[in-house]
Image (cartoon, rainbow over all chains, first blue to last red; front, side, top):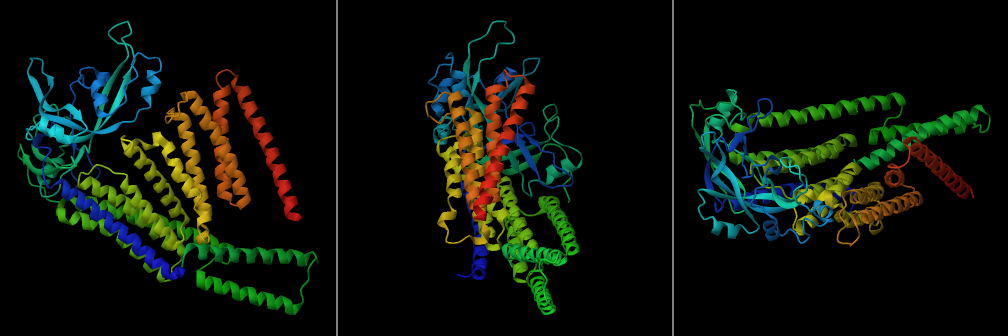
Length: 256
Length: 355
């Protein structure tokens, strides 16, 4: 075949790849939304903060703000229940004891793994000075098998089984509160929830766009009363979508 | 027309200009004197040839025309980038008011329109530079569009997107003879294969650069593509070799820094040392192979790899205990020694060519 005949065929094939890729993405999204098997929950502004955008963009993205139950700052996203035993259940090879001289070299090159993360929408994030608990989205469990976690946490109006990335953390730094060196330990860490940005399509974005246009970004959402609540579903692939947005304060509908 | 034919035509026009200048010098020095008839016949032939090349391929036949062409190309590139940015920002502006059902078709239309524009411009006989620009814009648009689609539908990322991007880049590279797109396609394909291996091994694919060793088999395959091809389409063989060599050497470099031994049983230090030695050896082999094939990019890739691995190894051996001025003095002396070796090699090559 001459070059001049091949060229349109190659361009056509390239176009076909573009179309097929988009169709495949759409099919996957449709499959995910077939059933909200991994949670249908209402989250407020404290759990889903507005992401600032540049210029006059009308793209609306909300960032998932979850917490762990770890008190120590340096163990951020590394809850106390995420021990070496839990890591081994996930598939991390933890056979080398933490006290072994070669443990640091062995564990530092381990790659993070995908896993399912269970988020409790009524988990205790922190306590106020008067002892009152502040509740919100808290990571309470991890696992490889979403089906098993669905059975363990059947209340899908309270628990979400999201996709995430977890890693092994080898800690052999001295305790800042204690002069003596504490023994090295292996802990698990929840690196991120995937995806942690949720797109809000029209018409659900109207109230949020109005809020943003009036200068109300997501900053300081922890310290004030939430202004909106969003019903989010997590589907068969553990990917979320927005079902409804409810404004908790007066908002003028957005007109672009 | 494709960029290779365009490039070859421009090179011929340049050779004619050089030939005319050299002929003038030879005539001035009385080394070669043409008769009137030979002179006018040669001038007529060259003039017709340059006219044909200018008409058919749009080549620049004078220095001032060449400079003006560069200005036009830069203006086109900047103008095209500004239009691209304008469309993206406009989409951002209206996105929130478009119905959700319109999002995907609108996103998918963007790269398709650019691909169609590239083909239309090629058929219309437009200068190959503009066709290449449209094809490149189409590839970039596809990459952005697929990423945006994932964000819009809240999908978790997948390495399969890299395979799709690679396919489009390679197909367009072959359609229009664009070497840059072929390089992009080869790199994306190797990245996809590395990410796939990491994913199959049970780890998060996003961290595949930390397991750069998984990229080496596909990099070697890219390097070995040219012998499998019947002919060198658009002089792509050099691109395959340079990309394969760069990816393999880059992977070895990362492996020598990360400290993961891939289950070889070697200690971290021993494995890193082995990777650096392998990198040195492979770089030297790539340089020699590139010299044999007369492929400049391959030679340069191997040379850069050799310098980097040599510096890293010497740094590991000497930096901690040697005074710094002595370290850099030794580096300079090694560079001079290498220069002398390469000059000797060049002299031997020149001697062999003369024979």
